[in-house]
Each structure stands twice: as C-alpha cells, then as structure tokens.
Amino acid sequence: MMNKYIMRLSHVPNVDIGCRGGYWQPRQDEKDINLKENKLSIMRDKFIDWRERNGLGAGNMGLMWVKDRGGKKIGYFSYNGRFWRTSQRKEVA
Image 1 (cartoon, rainbow, N blue to C red):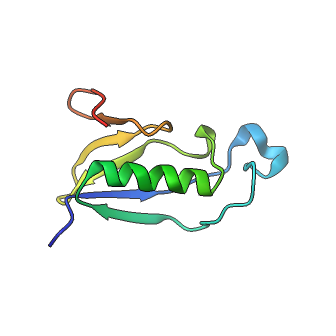
Image 2: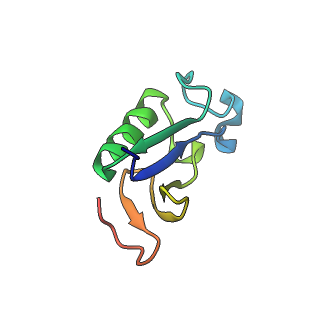
C-alpha cells in the first residue's frame, strides 16, 4: 500500500549561534530523512522526535513541508509541531 503523505526532515546551521558551529549540541542525524506515512499525527510525532533527538532549534530548520503522494504540497509542520494546510493556513494537528 502506498503512503498518503511524504515529508523530508532537513536541518541547517543556525547563523545566530555560529560561534557554536550553528548547533546547540551534536546531531544524531547528519543526513536528510524522508518520511512516508498514512497519518499526519504519526508524521508529527516522528518530526518532534527527530527535532528533539538532534537538539534543533527553530533557526536550524525551515518549514517542514508535507506533500501528497502526487508531490503536491498540502501543508507544513511549524517548529512546535502544528500542521498548517496550504489552502486555508488553518491549524489541523
């Protein structure tokens, strides 16, 4: 069965803490991670786990875009784990 949603987890150094190399602590995941799930709630939980495991702040990431299986952006997760739909910018998760 194909997964309904796709998201890439990616981080960058935060320029505001350049003296620390751009990160507060060493990262566990150096490479991007591609998630494929059928539920946004599971995707959110994996996003938050990844963020915490790597000690990331909001300055280490952009919006975490979620796409449907056709590749269309349907919304994004903000740093705090809220999901915002692109069509209405309404919180749903």
